Length: 149
Image 1 (cartoon, helix red, strand yellow):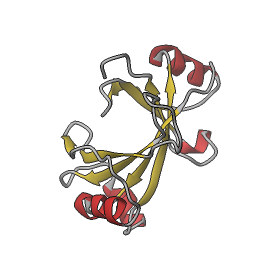
Image 2 (tube, rainbow, N blue to C red):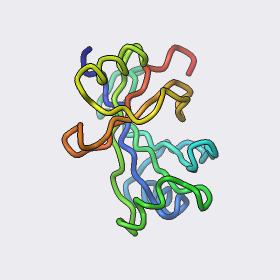
Image 3 (cartoon, rainbow, N blue to C red):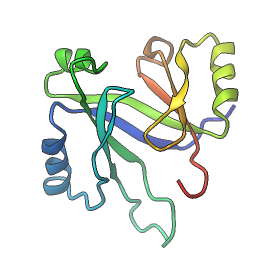
């Protein structure tokens, strides 16, 4: 397996609207997706595009920032906010061409995959790898989106 493109960096926030305002008004973000709820994962989120400077027209663009707010009292990110009340970097996400092959590969290397592949916010399958097995970073592995996503 080869390391794929970094798709996004996940940032937990206690208030999604405040975070959107910060990225728009302070950081100058011009392309922020509409917030969406993912009840099955207990989160509300949106993506902030970070364009590549001087990129040719039609290029993929840069890495995204995924802003994540807990959705409901059962959200798995409440613990993160308890330890980090202002929020902060939660995970990093890399693309792979085949999610099932990637899962087998990580497990063959003794890495703890957290659960089975499931549908992520980009409409492709994802899984997470335990931070203790990834240099201290919670790592999301995501199947590269197919055309049309």
